Image 1 (cartoon, one colour):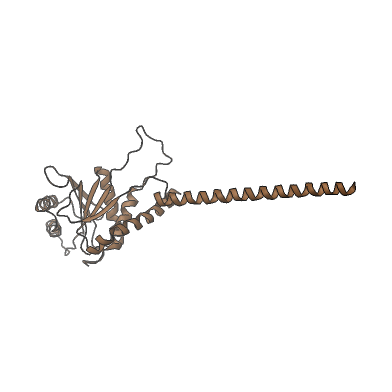
Image 2: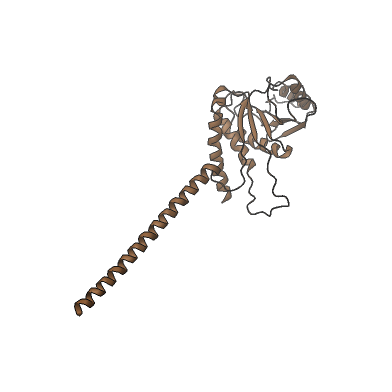
Amino acid sequence: MTTSICCILFTFVAMQSLRKSLSFSLTHRSLLTLQLSSNRMISTHLQMQGYTSSVTTKIEVTTGDSQSFKGDLLVIPFYKPQLPKSDGDDSEQLIAALKTMIPTGISESLSAIVSDILSEQNFKADATSKQVLRISGSLPVKYIALVGLGPNPKKGSSGDIEVTTAARLGRSIATIAKDTNVENIGVVMLPGTSNPGITQLLLGVHDASYTDNRYKKVPPGGFKTPKFKSLSFLDCSEKVAADIQLTNKLTEWVASGVHFAKDL
């Protein structure tokens, strides 16, 4: 009798232990499966959208020449010329110096328009200064924008555009795109601009395009979606043209990380 009771108790305890072991195994397996599934979801999300969860502007980047560019907006950057110190008004000298910096690649009609804009003496190429003109007629662009970069930090060097200057130019391009509500933009690149300068310019574009509407009340009709879709780098080197897609992709990932930090 005692032996039977002991066998029954032993069998009961063994069954309880086996049930707990199976329960733990199933729970552990379920958690592991859930974790792997979550990791795959996060990985897929990162591949598709990057790190940030705020509104991002997807920009198609291409290269070309300013003579054949057709789009909504043509951006022409200018350094501010360094003139000899004078006690009198040097406006005429400044304008004359700026006119010598008009890109030779653009058409004669566009060059004449830029020359007329400079003759008004409102644009002096100071850092962050902008002058935008709406063009009518049969010209290949709707707007021309002159963007001031300030004095060349490299003092006339023909090397790559300086980091701060490139980022400032990119932010100006994004701001003008918002103000004019355009889709396709071409920017005439300064001589000597290489991949690092293009990278900083694109980071400036993404920085100024950042929008976080997550905690804002949705207005009637929803938030306005930026029309800015494509950016063409004009008259750049063959090296820049060959690497432009890789440069753009890497820049998008860096910008996504920056936006994620802003999201926090």
